[in-house]
Length: 135
Image (cartoon, rainbow, N blue to C red; front, side):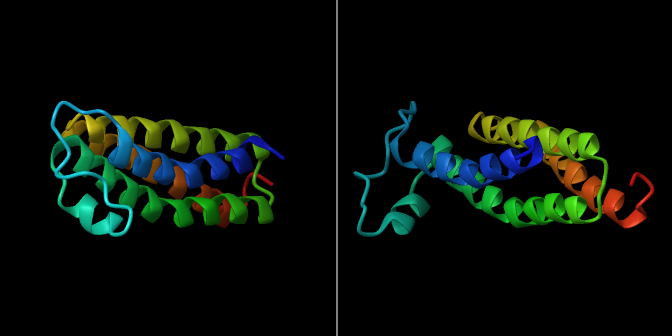
């Protein structure tokens, strides 16, 4: 299995990591009530600070995942150069990890820039597949 497919696996695990951070990480602010496994979504919605931002990063990570995974698969189907697929996939993962860290640190402007990098990495895979110039 090549690097890009491993990156798809990592991208699928990132939202789960965010959920774990939101539910169980130690932050300077206290959790609003004890974690409620009977109603975890309601509990997470009532949180504040970094815990709430980790939950928001989880949602955004789920949103980014299918677009990225499909791009990797389509690029492979279209026989895009494997090196270029892998580079775009690695850029996506590095940017997404940075995005989550910046979300937790409440660095909104920088987080948006890094989000754009991950988005452009994904779009580049679609464009490479569409142009077919690198087969």
